[in-house]
Image (tube, rainbow, N blue to C red; front, side, top):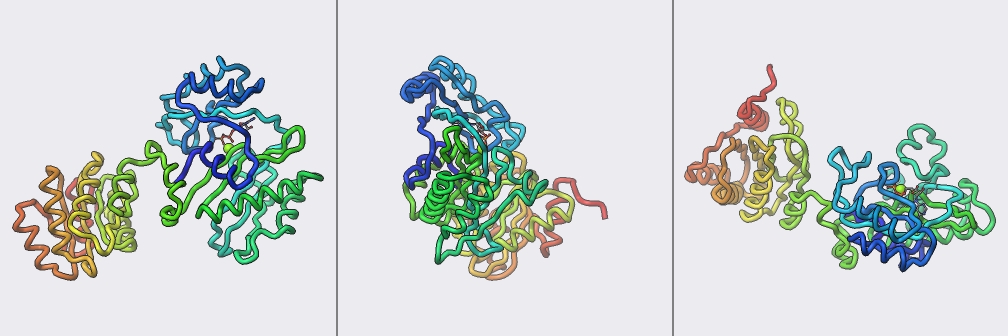
Length: 391
Ligand code: ADP
Ligand code: MG
């Protein structure tokens, strides 16, 4: 789960990470009031969307009056902002953040990630802040420092100082950086974060080290431990189909193709996507209904697949182990009755109660194309939409 910059700054602030003061607003008048409340000659108005690259896209502006804050907020709010991370359709700006303006002397990069290779959380730092870290890593990898953090010891003082020196921080800034990095690491651990990215971390003209941007992502599996973080979820930033799927505990990822796939087991679901591609079409989704799915869950999954109007045919590929084929069939029948199924449906089932499952489908009167095995089913579903690979 991702959260907005202003929310990340609130969370980090609670852990003692230095962040500028600011106030979120959803109307131009509230933006003007926020400017006045800050009580400073200048402020920065920033679009709040779950994507970076806002600065370059015109989503961040330095303003010098309440009126200017109001005007810029009016220009952003309710409209899409297109950045290099949003895709061409952009993201609708529903909220802006009015923040005290900092005098920037240097822009640095600081991140914390779950580093699978090092089997730890790693601190990533670079003197090249304010730019895409992926680009810096690709073009000048020597400018990206990675420091794995021992999970038992935590971030050691010498590690923080080593990075501070490499970032060419001076005097008091070194201690400030060490405190900031330690607080950031504490926040990472205690919130079950999967990513924290501070880009830029800045040195101000008066020599303070503070976070000017903040991105935080959390491990969904840890969210039940953090109701206060779960509350920060912004459903307007998420794919509605994925939100619906998460209500039923379905592992669903929306993709761009036109073959809806319903599969049990993540491995089989991946293999199914591969074989659809191999047969000449593109999967519309990844969907693992899980091992213990009941008819209601299957029906929900089926409804979600069919709600995507790009889906031109559905492929159900089930290996009945814990999941029984008759339960699956009941779910499919139930869902097909609820939504009027008017696209081809190909089913390949194998395993527990397969005969009973096939019988249920047959008795239901729903038009089902049966696949004998995975490759056959994939071929049939692709043929059904007239996109079969020539072979
Ligand atoms: P994004 O990463 O989406 O472009 P940032 O929050 O990093 O958004 O802002 C882009 C740039 O705007 C920053 O690199 C910085 O130069 C400037 N900026 C952002 N916030 C402030 C601020 N509070 N004061 C001064 N400049 C800012
Ligand atoms: Mg940024």
